[in-house]
Image (cartoon, rainbow, N blue to C red; front, top):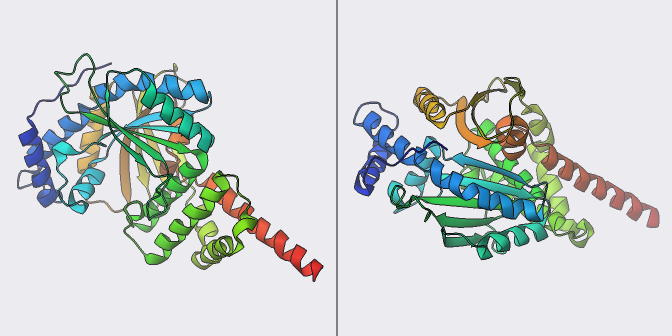
Length: 351
């Protein structure tokens, strides 16, 4: 693993964040220097992520051998948006710049994986747990987040680095993916509860209905909630829109030696296309990624992200939002609609 260490003080990182809030749209005013500080701060999270990854994978695969595990570094626009959105948030204290995502089959396995990781032996420090299953976000988001502070052997090189671990079910992941897809194509910050009230209300309600599906509850237990979701889906034209968002992917051939790779994905929302570039070294990946971020800083059509997984197949499973893949969400919604039709038919026959 390439060792890219932090080159700046906490004070310099904090000042860079403050500068970027004011100058992100302008290359003058110290933007480039501040961006370089942010970029080094972000990339320096790669080693702490890697050092925790084996532990997370071992616990996840020990419970669900089909678990999906992927990692990512937070995008600059997302970092800037969070600094602007959350009062008191400072760049040097942001805990989710480095992230790992684990997707498992069901709620029971989410709980088991979470417990196994929390109760296992690791030098890293669990700083925070956010249980968005027991206490869902108003947006409808559900999942378990664990925030770990790096305390490994190279702690002196990474003294205040954190990694956010997200653990979700496949259904929770399908919901979160679709929120990001719709947000991207409608150019709304739905993920941060910023956008049209119609879409926000739809996804909040979908979160409740999908949670019942995840828990194995019959949708007949609450017809009114299901029917309202379907009514809103019809009003918004959800299924037709999601089908239209399907992306025609353009990427390099996936014949390569299995192992960790870095993938840069550039999505064009207007043309419905995505370009995936693979890198074998973090240094090269982050250099190209940084230049691409600056190039697209004013674009409302294109979006770029850098992530790491073992293969392109795993990449698509872990980050389907960048391929506009809302297949599972659409399947669940279609099943709910079919259940409503069957119930209505049965009721009319009984009458």
